[in-house]
Length: 138
Image 1 (cartoon, one colour):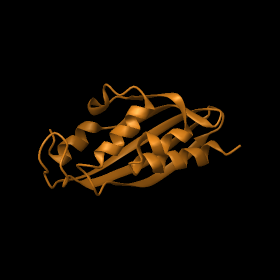
Image 2 (cartoon, rainbow, N blue to C red):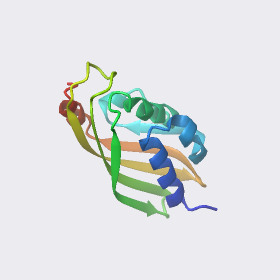
Image 3 (cartoon, helix red, strand yellow):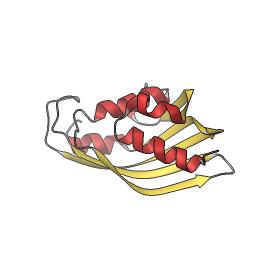
């Protein structure tokens, strides 16, 4: 069996590079859930919806990328935490307004909970208000 750390790394990269559900589903339970205390994601309840949201985010922010700051596994609780920084510039069409040309650099954490070797739930910890302000979207 592959370690949950390795699976989480593959999922994280696929999600953050805009592969959508098609590129992420092999690492997840089909009914994997999602939660975040962030306004742009208020109605996002499944990991499938979230991976598609991330894919869509790369339309208005085509140079969007991530930098991993930390990756940690808690084997006892069967979860993996990934801390990253997302950055990019709103130069593409889409988003709540025409391209602003403004950059975002935003810290976030994913907590991926596993059932066996599949992600069953993910929580995103993110200050969305900060990101929206930096991009000129609020």
